[in-house]
Length: 206
Image 1: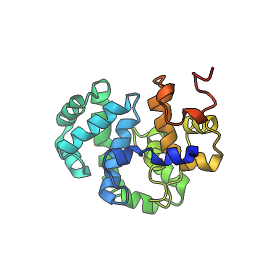
Image 2: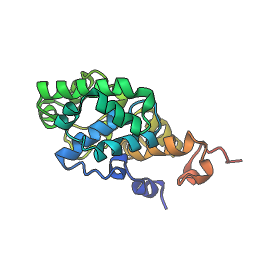
Image 3: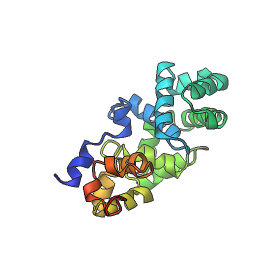
């Protein structure tokens, strides 16, 4: 079995959350999830917090704006997002308000973007949306949104090189490479890693 075969089987985070990115409403949900994932917080907490938003029905721009700051903080806390609850609640309100006022929604933002770099620039203009968030959001939209072509992150590039992948394949499998780095490398779980036999940096090689 090739390393590519294993990488293909690793689910994207949007898939794990039950999202179909071909649907506009799920693309907004993924934008919300990307904002949560982008903080310096574990992926497990981000996933749990996103599911709390789903349980509370806070999955559309209007529902989030109507919820109010206090309720957003409570939902963030219920998912374990306590370290960044206040700032994230404020950022969500500001981002979505500006998104609606300037574009009407994410789909119109994408239509107005001239090219992939312009799409990234427009997303980065929202306060609280940084390069990490933009990369998380757009890398899983490759092949879905025409202009979703972010440059691979350094984490993905380093991980891909350790597995002997060329630049094109690093871009293709970026989401899987990020998952491997976060869930296996950073947690010292080399012996459990599904691609350990291909890795040039495995810690149990001796």
